[in-house]
Image (cartoon, rainbow, N blue to C red):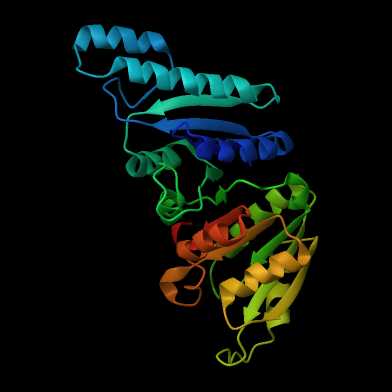
Length: 287
């Protein structure tokens, strides 16, 4: 894990994502890109105040320079504040609306992980709410870790991975390898849990054997497999996470083929809202 993107609108909510990204970067020696997506007339990206002054003089753009200066100052202050932890933090303001800007940035910068703060509220007025997290999950080729207030790093030694039957997908190993890298940062045990509704699950395969093979093929080491009985998959995952006192929940989604559609971005969003734990989502459709 070399590069972590933390999108920010400079709110308290967005800073929660930066807090968690720092914890990961400290342990993985990753670089953090702290990026604000704001439309401005100074090119796709700028990082120096001199660029702003020279271009406003030459182009005579009608733009609220004072607001842009303030955003840049806040961004630089955030970078300076958290760089004291020995983490390399690069800051930038990108000239794009959020959705288009983050899509281009992810492709251009080879990001390994996105960490985002979320309010966990459906009708929140903040820019970086669950809806924006959902947008990133839909387009990102790398995992998205959404975080709400109340997370405890000490609890990250237990990670619950909600799994379902996914066959013939070459990227499932990549997803598990990335999660294993995150788990290694916190010396965590990964609990693979499949929530089964006996009334509707008529699978003839040996589920425990299937998921054990999945883990072994991805070279997971510190893990266990549980088949958990529940009528609702989301409730089952939440209940199991509470029982083992997990600090983080992971979801690998592959919605288009119908095999894994329950683990959608809405499912991830629901987990964040209901339990407050950070949720790691890897969208196989984008891999």
